[in-house]
Length: 70
Image 1 (cartoon, one colour):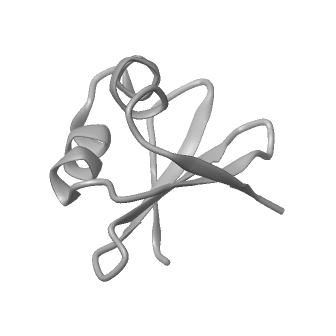
Image 2 (cartoon, rainbow, N blue to C red; image 1 turned 60 degrees about the horizontal axis):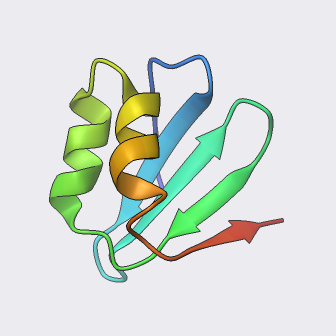
C-alpha cells in the first residue's frame, strides 16, 4: 500500500486500499494501524486536512473498527 505523508506532529503518513476499503495510518511513534471499511472520501479528507490529527481523533478512531499491525 502506498503511503502519503501527513503534515502532523503525531501522524506520519496514511495509505488506502480501494479493494478492501482499508485506511492505514502510520504514527510518528512507530504505531501502524488499519481502519476497516472506511470510505475513500475519508482518506481524501485526511490527506487534505489542515490538522490531520484532529480529523483522526474526531472522525476516524471513534467511528471505524481498527487493528494494530506489528
